[in-house]
Image (cartoon, rainbow, N blue to C red; front, side, top):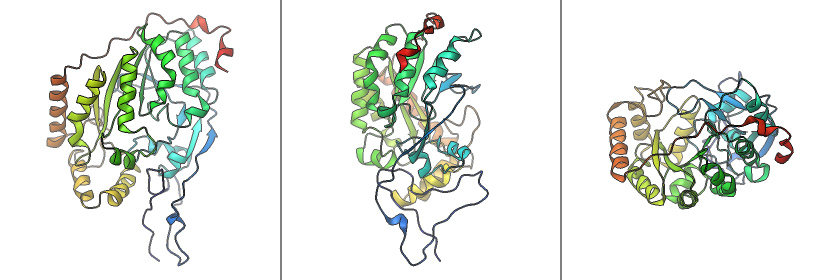
Length: 357
């Protein structure tokens, strides 16, 4: 019997639910003559599971990221960005980096309390915490659970610096906390913008805020005095790379103080997931696009080498870097202000945990 081709699921980015790399058995759909259950375009429901974590701050020693610690209140992301580099992490849970990643979400209900305990440790020394780096801290489920809001309350109470990257306009909900922290030099926000084309954005990242809405959010944050930057990520050959300068220009006009970019990353299962998406949505240039990606990764779909994984190598990657630097300089981004690490007061946590209920 023929193996079934990946099928579109309304409101979802991935087209299949391939088995994770650690599983001993794999599953494949096939045509048994009774019809394909995957042909049903009905929406897939989001399921929530508790992540019983014993700590909330994760430390890293990566030389090519500007932080050494981060907090991810959620595992999996309902935004459904098909290119998300975090998808393969769902394999550690025995789940698929495909549709499972965007429909089976894990959350840490005690994250604010755990953070309070870790910040109060005598050995703790403050440095900017990156909030929601692996998966978006302001993904749709945050409207219901408000974990990110509660984490920000702890950071605000202790005068602890924090950086946030998001694709969501939901961050506007927390402007009261963000403006208060910005006044003390305690917060940076980066809006991730992949494309200004709403049709392309909907296919790439089906449940993230529309491009126009993200620019509006950037402007609202900037007008409120919150230091904000733009992250053009990921840049994908022959798909959105032509928009680089336009995204930078419109973000600068909206009030962005700085800018960055990331070349498409396809670790582990993500190569096949993204290839499926290309063959479905961009069939006429899918092979050419994948060849360009491989050419920019030293003959591989992904190179995890520090210093190269975010940018790629070769002529095309060099051209992207030159274009970005030229546009950034031309638009005169002034850069983000420095963080203030001198106001941290963990003692303020004493007796205050009831505020986070």
